[in-house]
Length: 103
Image (cartoon, rainbow, N blue to C red):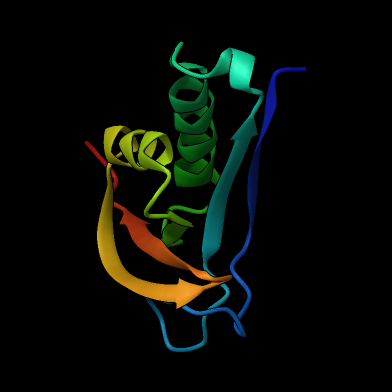
């Protein structure tokens, strides 16, 4: 195993939402350092987003990462996420984005 990709519910109690009640689908990913820089995260996450688009066509998909994690921000950008807001949480600035479905 080189990493994981998850689609979960973004907790209503967490910061950052695109709908008032929260609970949006949230993309998460974590890969071993040896797997970084090869495009695996982008490819795996793109497949998960394709599944979401088919299974939950009207569901907003969000992503949250630390602004200091520039590699994760690049993955989010490649996948089509756009910034919604930034906020402080867990002692660091967080980037919160919304997936913009393509074609």
